[in-house]
Image 1: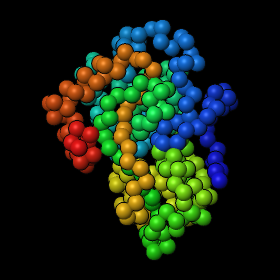
Image 2 (image 1 turned 135 degrees about the vertical axis):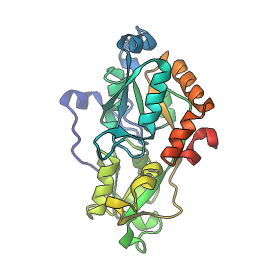
Image 3 (image 1 turned 180 degrees about the vertical axis):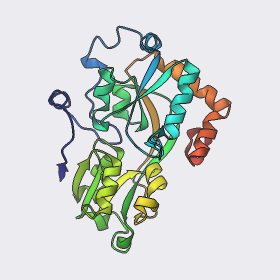
Length: 281
C-alpha cells in the first residue's frame, strides 16, 4: 500500500529508526530507555546552564512558518517565546524531520517537541508530555474541481493519497477501512502533500485541520478545498520532553501563568485559534 518518498535521513539515523507509528507522532525509537545516560543530569539544570530551550519544529502554518520578511512566526513560535520568557530562557528553534523527532529529542539536539504534536498512548509511553493545550482533527484536501468526484472516504479508496510521514494524517489513512485501500505515499512535510494535490500528482491528502483552515482555499492553494463534514480523528496537541524530564513541572507552571493573565488567549486570537484552545473547550 505504502510508497515512501526519499527522506533526507543520514545512514546512522536510518539504522536507529526501526519502527513507525502513525499520528503526527513518530517511530518510537528515540526513547531514553535505550540511552541510560540521558537522565543522569537534570534537564532543568541542563537548559538553565545553556540559557536556551531548543525547540524542535517543522514549518507548519499557523504554528511555525516564515513570514514575507523571512522571520519565523506563528502561534507556537509566539507561545514558546512567551513560555521561555517566563522560565528565564531564550528560545532556539531547530527545524527537524518530523518522523525522527524522538531521535532528535533523545540525542539532545532539541529539548522539546513543540509543533502540533498529537498526544497518543504510544508517545505517552516514550516521552513526557505536557497537558493538552489545543484541539485538532484530520481533514481530507482535494482539488476544488474534483468536489463532485470525492465526497466520502469510499470515493478515495482506490485513489492516490498523501500525508506527512509519521503524522496523524498517516495514522488516519492507515486506520480508515476505505483510505487504507488507497495508493498511499508518505512525504516529508504536510505542505509537500498539499503541493502534490495541487499539481495533480496526488488525488487527495490528509492533514491537520489547523493547517488546512489557514491555507486551503487561499492564495497558492486557492484551487484546493476540504471535503466537508469529514473529521477522521479528534485529537489534542501537547509539548513533548524527554522521559521523566524535570522541565515539565516548570513548563506547566509557565503555561498556567500565561493562561491566567490572558496572554495565551491573545496569541491564539491573533492566529484565529481561540475556539480550539483546550482552556476554552
